[in-house]
Image (cartoon, rainbow, N blue to C red):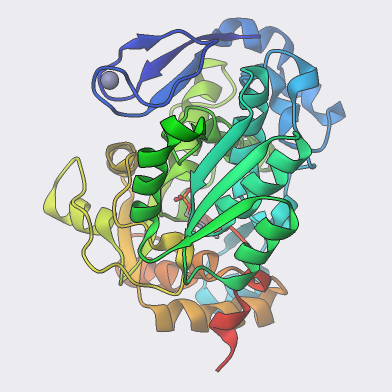
Length: 388
Ligand SMILES: Cc1ncc(COP(=O)(O)O)c(C=O)c1O
Ligand SMILES: [Zn+2]
């Protein structure tokens, strides 16, 4: 289709498009997909969109798969952007929205990344996929691998929410539960993948999950009639969604769809695992590993992210920020959002609400600004967090 090459996000080295890649062969940082956007824009026009399929493959020309037959889909994306008027009134914000990603297949935004990664793996002839996961990425990989008739090998911390473990087993994946964190799971995949013949689909260690996630940015623009919001609040672990949206905004600008104005990109982390917050405060471009990471928002328990510099670059370039909320705050916010708006959020998504309160208190967000909170998953996957 319109892919020209892959480019290292750090050193810029060009890599050939139609072969298997993990990280940059020179510097070991993530690769990003580059397109001939002029070519893409010939058929991908704003006017063409209303008649297209109601999933993320509506943005076909800026997604990486060559042959339609290789698309592995469960109906992901094109999730609702819900107006949160009750919460908005309570907070004194005129325009508040929730992008409700719990309505994806496997109930989280991880479906977006995995539809792209598994489709590309199919196109490139891969049979066995492996992933370290905090939970939701595992469930998504298991489902898409089953749909593609591939094998999935999943490594999760042993205290990952039960629903994530069960859904992987029920969709035919091989699950290994480990003593340790997602970083330990990643190291195990790294140690074994060559001997086992697994392709590693860890966050940003393969180039296509971020392409699926970037459709969050395209959808937001389309659903807001091509006016981006003033503020995006995003619960950040590995950061793929934030990095993807930032990439989407640039692509849309190059295609002439939006101007140069960008939302303030705000990263929310848990107080028990906030490496990006620390790095921003310390003025660093790369984040140190966060020691003794702990939070019940399991998707935020990522002590070291390989795309840290891309998250931090986007935050800084957008005039945004990064802040942490406590587990008590994010669990309390789940029932608050649920009761006010009828959305049973994942604790990661709920973290956006106390973050917004802090941002308003500090003057970083004003009441006349439009704000989008990302509910990245469903509370249904985290029942143990809500049982006392
Ligand atoms: C529900 C939920 N929200 C947020 C995140 C963090 O996502 P990312 O790694 O893209 O920053 C995860 C990751 O596991 C998640 O499962
Ligand atoms: Zn490089």
